[in-house]
Image 1 (cartoon, one colour):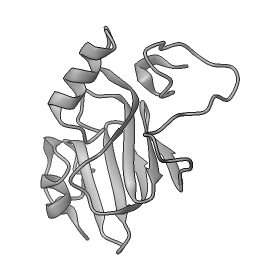
Image 2: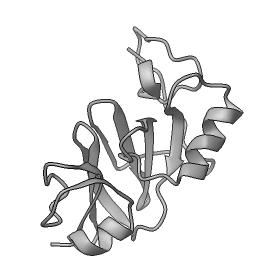
Image 3: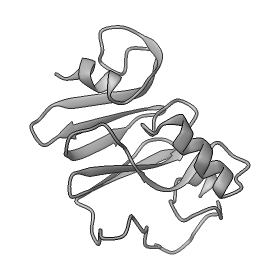
Length: 143
């Protein structure tokens, strides 16, 4: 169902029985990759990574100001982003994947970026962390 904005269909956080087109930013008519985590999802369009869904672990890779502005603009009572937003501070991305509360992206040169909740080492940084911002974690997590 649509709890937590995982359907990317706007502030109506309800289930949909039929497939419904997800609209990205103007100018993008197709995605080359889609993926999801437990309560978040991604799309890649011409190298730009977009994310949406629940926000509590930093798994979307979005700045706090973006998340807070989205929640306020759409009058949401839940901690979520219900429409696709671009993830900034990344090079052109080929694909992405999500875990429970963490995320990974593969850039066009084969480097891996990780962010989100990493208390059990799932970010691949060589240490545990409760949250790691994209960009900071990405620069340290290239393998």
